Length: 166
Image 1 (cartoon, one colour):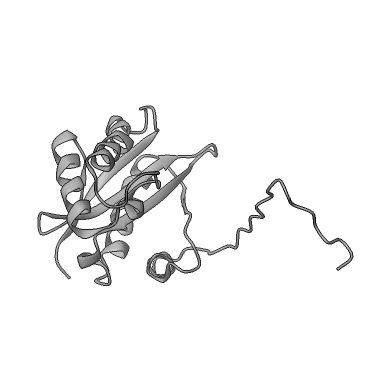
Image 2 (cartoon, one colour):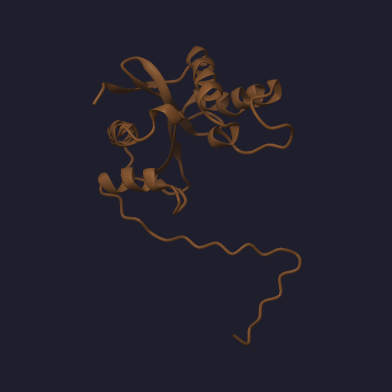
């Protein structure tokens, strides 16, 4: 395994992260989807920076989030974040790796590093929200001993009319 490290993002490394995202991902993989033309348009590049910039202020900033570049031998491969939740001692995490970095065990190594940081900050547990289809994230979480739970969500639209006779 190459040397994986987390480096807290600053303005300069955020711009470098954007370049990794542009060259190695679709925009919707790295930030919330937005309307408009697909791909890395000038507007999407600006929105990427706008989305992540508040995280540079850390846990006491407006997004209550620390964000780190995941580096492999000094090269940015993606990011991982640590965010406060409304539960005492519980933080939330999310991770993204460029396509060319996936499948190499980097997510597990980055999560290990993040657990050490979270413990030093006084958190007692970390939660992650992912989909059942995200086998890589589930595998990394399992390798680190995560207790996986099912969360169900029913979307109720204006035309919702349940068939209660079933």
